[in-house]
Image (cartoon, rainbow, N blue to C red; front, top):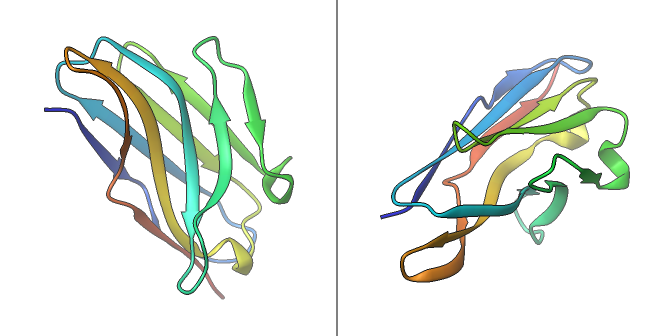
Length: 119
């Protein structure tokens, strides 16, 4: 059974940094364009970043220049390095992976990790 496990959230002061990780486990044939999203109470989940299998990245405008997404294919893990954090970055962060296993392809979500940016 495929499972995504996130880690790395926490409380940080404005201007600080955090690194989120998301690891996939299970009988996985391939992982396509994993991404990070975030959500605050009362709002829809929004796109943050995505990375291709070759390492190409795309970011939401509000994180460009501050966040960096990377992946380690051998570990089936993606990362989100978040620098120069702002209070408005406070949210629950979710990773998403489109994973192909023996049953076919489908989207999976991590459990979410809370990021709080506050003095």
